Length: 114
Length: 114
Image (cartoon, rainbow over all chains, first blue to last red):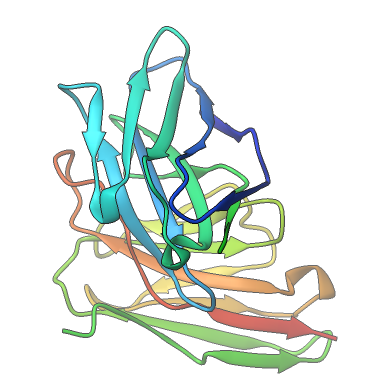
């Protein structure tokens, strides 16, 4: 079974500052990793995913994440945030042989201050 | 392109009442899922259907039943609602297979059980 821990429940940052949202996972098998974003009163949208290959993955809206197998981490980064990035962010994992049964972290609420 | 459509958007039930949450997708996806979202707990899988004609339990199936009516539709039923089932429910779908594991989410149903 897999599990995901998002180390920060809330992250406040100033506009145009860099941000890192941390995610660690646990699994006994190879995994796929995902970051989703949820804007208020909406469903989740995919930001980026790691399936295989390059460990640095680029997604939408200028976000990127790096898969680190030795540290079992998949941290999300953006070099300069905007007010519109205010949302909740979820890290998720699934095993590569499962029916895409994602296990989600608890979420990190990113608040951008002007 | 509507994607994943959930109805209703909001619902209030009294303890012991029953209801069915509807979900339909128009992307010809094989796999469909029901998740519940509770504060501080991320999303937890209730049931999923890997393909038409099959359903399986997820992490938190107790108190729920599902029906994969056809390839497009996947409904979630609460036979006797309890206050612990107050939550936001999300339906999701994915093509299936291992090359594109991203879930496509609906906008959710906010359920309150009093």
